[in-house]
Amino acid sequence: MDVLINLSLNGLATGMLIFLLAAGLTLIFGLMDVLNFAHGGLFAWGAYSGIWIYTATGSFLVGIIGAILTGMLLGILTERWIIKPVYGNHVQQILITLGLMLVLSEMLKVVWGPNQISASTPSYLSGSWEVGGVIIIKYRVFIIAVGLAVFLAVQYVLKKTKIGLVVRAGVMNKEMVQSLGINIQKVFMLVFMIGAGMAALGGMLLGPYSGVIHADMGMEFAILAFIVVVIGGMGSFSGSVMAAILVGLSGSFMAYYVPDLALAANMLLMAVVLIFRPQGLFGAKG
Amino acid sequence: MSTLLKLDHVETFIGQYHILQGVTFEVPKGEVTVLLGRNGAGKTTTLRTIMGLNHASKGSVSFKGEEIKDLPTYTIANKGIGYVPEDQGIFAGLTVEENIKVAIKKENEETHERLDWILNLFPDLKKFWKKPGGLLSGGQKQMLSIARAYVNENELLLIDEPSKGLAPIIVEKVMESIQQMKDKTTIILVEQNFMMASTIGDSFYIIDDGRTVSNGSMNVLREDEEMRRKYLGIA
Ligand SMILES: Nc1ncnc2c1ncn2[C@@H]1O[C@H](COP(=O)(O)OP(=O)(O)OP(=O)(O)O)[C@@H](O)[C@H]1O
Ligand SMILES: [Mg+2]
Picture: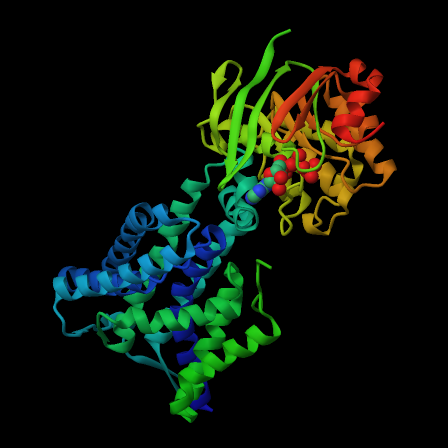
């Protein structure tokens, strides 16, 4: 029983980290038709900058805020200088964002060295609770709580505010949004910035969870995030959280019971979804 | 009578295709100007060019005396031009209410009045207020699209073939609404249904192969069977 609970919590926590990465990807794809392969780079940059600030200041919270701000800043620069010139051209987008991914990874090694860096859990989040004989690791619960809070906050903005309405409308019909007098470029930038901030937060949270961070951590999670975006439906925000939890849980359980098949299982899941529901489980676009 | 919008030798390329090759017309304030022409003549492209959705490479588009041809679409819209596209451009996943809300630039007394007025004209929209736009019938979508363009205090509405694919009784309803809007705003109407066009329109321009080839007052076209046959393929 305690194994099942722990595998579930582990899966949920990993799922939330994947969600933080996938949410931005799916919104950016849905709204701007851009597949951003550099998104994992923002995840890794969030981890490095956040852990660095955390180590320097001694405050985990300040580290988190620093990570998010770094992500947002990189997001704005990426949208401005890298993505904007290639809107509408998928081949160029893939090449340039893949290139940016490599540059972002290499830059991490230049700034912080090629070796992995250890990341510790702040004292108030380390350790565990014992509930009815089951050991529950605090930090996992913390990640799940943060992920859920981010999901609810973004969902609220999307469903209840004018800017959220504009974003949802933009996913459906960009020309019409502009014909109604809305500057969609500004909306693009905002969404890109928030997506990048979420990715950076995810990277930062992963640090203490896995104990170490390294320059290629973005790549590994980006693969899972892309699987999630496909399963959840490209452009569907609520789809991305469901799919991320699914992928997180499947990864956690498979790693315990059939470790060799953990990634393969998620690929298989994606293939099955693509065969039976090519628009994804919650596809916003046709 | 002052001129609200003026196109002067407008040329537009879509990709490598030279679609508009010289479109010239004037829209007097307070009137309904009808654009006629056979399928593929360039009527929709003309409206899209005014909105900045296609870019005019030559010529000029001036609105209230100001050149707007190189402005981005949202700026053009904010100058007071509402657009009802040929495919209606409804946000399928948004409710009727949300489709209208997203369009309202600044909610105030005036927009409320306009909204009430148009909802009285199209009670169906009120009835399906919380229904996703994608589930509306063709006629209801057309009504929603018109309502959405109308709620803001736009000085000019561009309406692209509102009768397309609708049952005659619905066409009549839609046309009646446009007739009523005439008092409040200037309209450019693209319309294949000549009966409808000639009842509502004050003046007409015929576009053929990307050029304006003829124009005049609607009365003239009603009399000129020869011209109708030549450019519109109708008698
Ligand atoms: N995206 C495009 N790429 C290439 N050609 C296009 C494109 N859009 C329109 N055209 C061409 O431009 C010409 C004018 O099209 P447009 O839609 O403006 O005609 P229209 O007068 O509105 O016709 P209809 O009455 O059928 O709506 C047509 O020959 C059409 O094939
Ligand atoms: Mg047309």
